[in-house]
Length: 232
View (cartoon, rainbow, N blue to C red):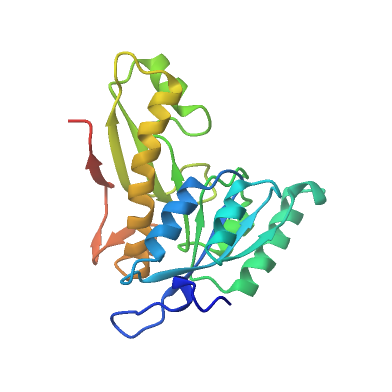
């Protein structure tokens, strides 16, 4: 371990150890970077224990290495089934002993068996205002539909694709001259804001997914996501 790495020399205000976070990525890792930056604040209640990618060329691995965070590559091409891959992934995660797993542009559909193992400790961020526009190409679809507002959602992961309980959403206006890339950049800026926030809530024991599948924040049922609205 690098003794100069802020992740290994963190002062935790309440005296308890920081939550160990595992981050799964497939690409550039901009949301990973937001999580790294937040974890390096003196009052952060979490530290990133490991970053795992299914792609060896993911730039997010370099981001993690620069921060002194352990990285591992587990290529899906080395496995003949989704179940076999998820079994190997679960083994890597158990070795890292995370309290929470954050999917940050991890372009894999996880099997129900994997999700069940980590139920309530698995977060994802999706570039739409769920439940609208699950899946891919959300920015183009929003523009084609003529929606006035777009955004991003942090949610607990369940076996249903992009279908877990929403925790927090950020909304942005859709401008008349928007192209998909322009809209995506504005949404991504808000993703970087809300993902560390949701992880902090979890690490501070403020956010939980109860056994009945309902989200609670500060001991109260979260029947709808917290809204951060930049669309006004």
